[in-house]
Picture 1 (tube, rainbow, N blue to C red):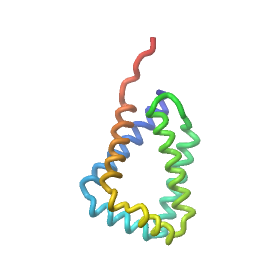
Picture 2 (tube, one colour; picture 1 turned 90 degrees about the vertical axis):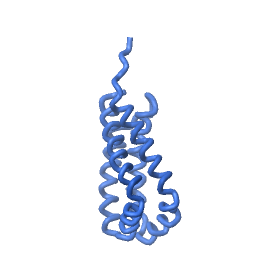
Picture 3 (cartoon, rainbow, N blue to C red; picture 1 turned 45 degrees about the horizontal axis):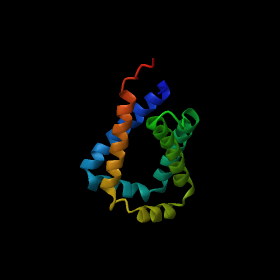
Picture 4 (cartoon, rainbow, N blue to C red; picture 1 turned 180 degrees about the horizontal axis):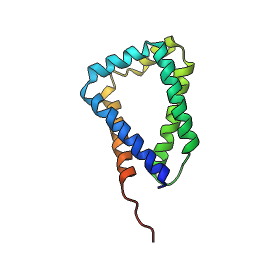
Length: 135
């Protein structure tokens, strides 16, 4: 695994763990906060611009489609950020509210949190795991 992939796996993994743990412990507060964000067009625009910059940086800086699961997951994470930014920037505020209702975030909350933590722990493990020497 390249140094860039290792760094990004550590960064994304620790970020997902740091976000997933409080989400697991505070469902009501997190759902309320996300619901408020979805209903705030200024925040959606701000988050759209931030995720656009992060997504572009990831896609341009790490487009690795081979070498194991970790590099591919890191690459897919960048593309997912880019797709999220497109949704945030191009969908109308009313469309975001409708999408939020369709996704039923509250109903699948713990499944989402479990996926976030599983990916986070895997990427952190892969990023911090010592490289195996090649002979």
